[in-house]
Length: 578
Image (cartoon, rainbow, N blue to C red; front, top):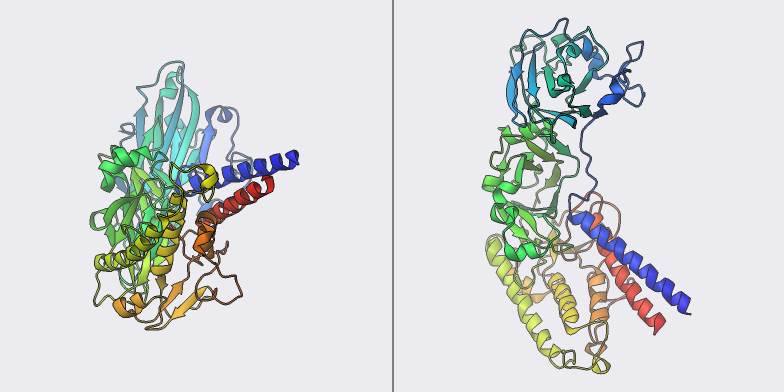
């Protein structure tokens, strides 16, 4: 018996650790799977006596001896120059240079690592961004390349031992040389070459009359400390919801220290508009080459003339809403068109005092505005602070702020009545454990569970009435779940994303049984049209619960589901032991 109890407690502890880890992984972008593109991260010593890129037949190989295809059948970069360049341009460490190239041209830059300490190891981080490409370049800059060497000879056909190079992939290129011996004087200098392809090497998308004077605009940087340009697959940005003219997005966690919210001294608290930048584009741009074709380039997204909205015309604020309760930035975007698809990117400058000096770009978040005007986004409510989504509205009468106040005031009246009834429950600090309604739950637990349930059931989540999905519940005009919505808000037809049944179960777990709360069971009267279940696959929000956001891998819903499982196991363990 004791051993079984021990196993139950151990299993519970392990599950709680897993839930906490998933919470952090969802909210903290530094713990999510970030695929940073640093394709050629190579230990310099491995290149001294071998050629990891070309075999005897001039086939391209990676440094794991796996033969791969060279894009656009380009020739080996080591054969691109027939002689040592006559001149080079000095480049300052960590300060990007921006210039242009025509077809067949190249530039060579030189860095003197003056800060290298003799006897230590040097790392060279060379990164490149394409800011723009010719309109006829069907490769979207994919035939452009950079090449890194520690002497000029390595850039010519006279030496094939160290062809460290990388092609631009959707506007991003990165080469790293690790662990060079700084005691060798030659190793304290690095050369970085950028080369445009010849016209015959390009997949040209236009016929006769193309303007061959169009150029590739690039930005290069080199550092011995860390890459100046970065790209991460993880977007670090999550869609909360849209309506017919607006969208609400939220960043990943900025910290896991809740005390920062109180002090307000962190950079993201005092300089929210410069900590991250947001960039919004049409996702179906008809332009031949646009920023979304170079969607791994910080420079392209920062400088594109095709941007529709950015940080300057977005409403940026802080929130602790969502799993974890840590600080995040939220972006309210207005002025969108109905039924229109957009893509949003988040960027982080390398130098916060100068956003033109390189930075990190995160993967894009796609979203589509709603087609109908019967749903409106509300957020930052007072009592129902977890509410942040489109609700049944009436745009001809209510602004977003006025609608938020109306719903919050209605929920507060109901909550105040409940809170009055809580005053007769014995759960204060002066009450003995034997007289409490529970030794595991407090009145505050009950109040919080009731608040979350009340806000989800009195402020429904709304989407277009024309969407046909099994988890949606159609509400015609004057058939909403409360008379308040029917008589005061008076929305047109919409589909409701029903509250999660877990919210009702939370009241059963946290509140006194004398209150008589009852939760309907699936398949029995009272369930359909009132609640729905979390479904763990796909990107849809199948039922509504506090802090939910849209994520491609459904991480939020999985985390929340495990939270409820952990609570159930805690109750089971208690009952089993006692």
